[in-house]
Length: 432
Image (cartoon, rainbow, N blue to C red; front, side, top):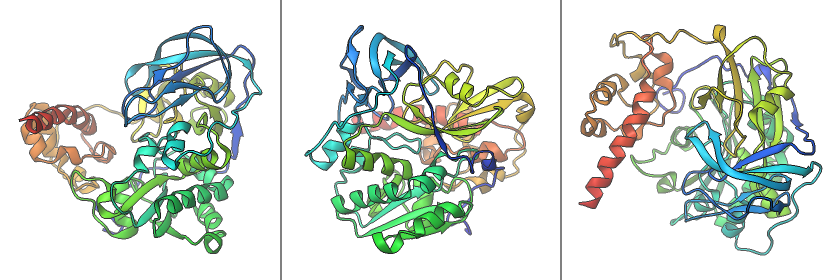
């Protein structure tokens, strides 16, 4: 268990394409359209607060949190609401959203919140987990029990992605101050910033502030999925989160570095979450890290990188291991969009599926100690009770099993589908 946790893989990270590229601000023109989804987070979609032809300001709340597990949505531009309808989404296919025509491209968000309770301010600002999970941050910052350790996740273990890395270098102090705000508000004893050791410049940047801010920097072995919450907690603290439980059960909260930056902007400057850094890479002429407004079409990001190199075969939103492939660039950037990766046919491995040869590689690679080869058979046979017994709900959908499988079995796909069915069984048991 040299990684700090069992399993894991060492893919070709390909981070050098953008690791040395500072984050560039993307510029906009009058009459461009941004399309802002009302569901950019785990939980209930926000309820729209505007109507067609209404004028909105940059930073204005246009979607209200609808329930405890939900959050607010803000306009990233000043302009006119031209329509409200369905937008393309890599996760759900379609999602309700608001289309806004820009009238003043130079406008930026004004201060929106002051003097509120800490968690209410975070809700008002619409902050979610920026590492990809998009869990509403105000909920995570309302633990029902004492927390003794705050871990800031700077692993960014997905191949290709470097937007978090660049923020760790370029916005080091803001990230630390955001983390310290959490630590102080929740009265947490220990603050640890965890970074994989293939990011020496980020580690160096944080170490400059260690004595002034009183925190620890932990350099971790580079292995995927080091950034998974349970893997990170085990690597950093040696604590095992019990099956079916959250990190707070072992006295820990984990937040992504970009989330800390957004939290700092909200608390110190009263700014809502209206933009994020995105890595655009792969088969584009000039791979970049871009700072873009929420709602920007993916096509604009690709154009900003000079367009495609060759013929695109697949576009992945997020990272290549846990992201979602799409066949269209007519799709807006959301709070969850950490990357846009373009692949040509020659970049992709053969996915021709053959029979499982029981080699056991998936078992060795699974960071949760599961047995994917057996679980696959239950999923295919729709034996969901057995799948539950074999702990499929512990699967974190990291894709390690599919990556190492020589037979190209789509294991993680089976488990994603199976988990939905298993959850129905669990709910039925709870209702009895």
